[in-house]
Length: 245
Image 1 (cartoon, rainbow, N blue to C red):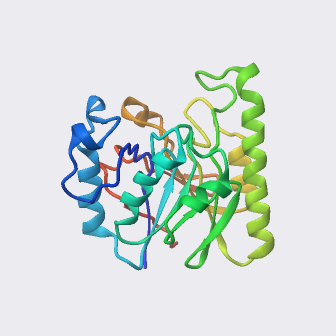
Image 2: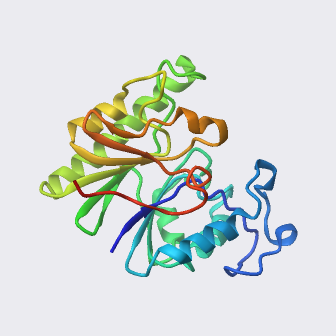
């Protein structure tokens, strides 16, 4: 049993589709080819089938679907569900359909789990998640617009980690964020403080694409292993997580 991670799938199927035989013009609302992701769903599928087995788990921290409504996001969920393994999903900044955690869970296939401001168990680990947000002092930060969201998201991560620590104090903790908890311009944040406080072993995040990959902070930071898992950064290959010392 292995835990993998890959984020930012950015799917946009407009009808039920199988793993193969997808027509780019008829079946896809928002092709990613314009970003150089030529038929990226085929690449994700092929790499996934080569590596992930039915007993594995894949963490998908955000930007799973471009859909604005849940009834359209279901097409993307069902495509992912045809791939092997259990899937744990959490929201990103483009997950506009995810206004209600309860409703998202009602629309998910059985083998898929949605977490947001809470946690789930994966093998011998607890996995907690929230979306995260832009960091104070980073490029693009707007104090008036971003501060409340930032603090709310940090509070949601605290709720998730407190519950995980209370219910399973002896299990190691992993965290799924969509936004990075630190950047080259911001060496710490409320999110990073919480990762340290709750002795999180590893945090996976996405959100960074293209040239922004150069902004990724990875490796051991203040005792927490950080890993960027945006699918284009991983060349569309689910990444096996290194969880052992």
